[in-house]
Length: 144
Image (tube, rainbow, N blue to C red; front, side, top):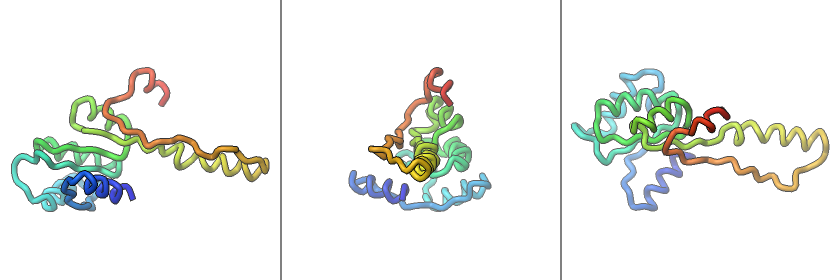
């Protein structure tokens, strides 16, 4: 769904979407070869962007960027590696999906409803996603 939404947004902006590439997250050489074969372009990769859908593929994508100048990288995950890459300019953006709020928090809410037979008046919890273009401040990092 994330990739389909990204493709639709690009289409709405009249930008060319090259399609989705399924790449291995555990083999750097195979990752690089798969992406290079799919893009099939030598030299500078200016104007080409890669959106990574998992944190485990970010190191391979950053390594590929060292070999292909001009490549822009974004990711659906946020963490220490992504923040460092944002600061060095190797990562264009990250999307913090607030997985705790989206994935875990509904469980305690449902348990509360079941156990107490009381319901929250408003189940809407603003949980993201958040678009990140720089690493968090020292104060924000202390909250992690």
